[in-house]
Image (cartoon, rainbow, N blue to C red; front, side, top):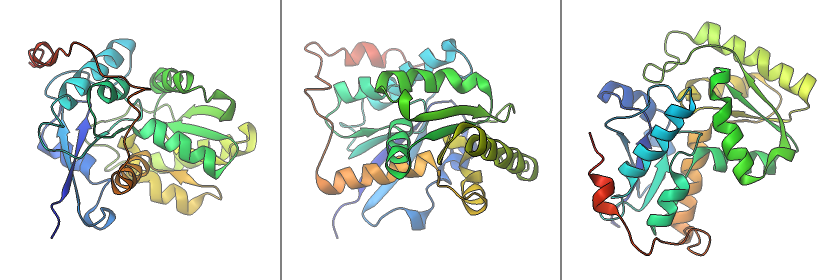
Length: 250
């Protein structure tokens, strides 16, 4: 039997084992292709909610710290467990193994499945995360809207116990995105919303993308094809600072 390809999935918020396990549920065993092994690892310090430019900087830095050793640890690829794609481009610069972010992967998939997509998220405090990446990727012309249900998220407990209320709010906003904004695809704005994906997909007439799953499957495909990011696009540093970066752990 071929050795399993281990994938380091970096959770951008520090949390206990129960919190990490809740996030790992987005990739159930029967969803993972044979020969692959995703391993969820939370950053040991950093942001709390991703609700500010303060937290955005911390997520970029701590995800980068957590991913910098992935190649030497024997991982075949890195998956970033946040639609903000925190630290993704910096890790691509430092690593040769593929690094995938749910934002870029799910937005690209949405553009293949429709003409205009809406990012549907928990609260407007997360809008700057999408504004940053969509501007960097140059994809605004394909965005119908950013919408939220104005509900403070729980990045550890996720949606457990709140499904009845949260799911209906999401349906209402997704319907408005279709009818008022012209959206023909919905992208969930956070991997923490994965518990709502099936319900929304079953109850809406347009595709609903679960970003963590889309990104994970894209990473599996890259590895099967033997592809990784272009080092012309993401050149390696002439003078790496790995030891200094590692000293930043707390």
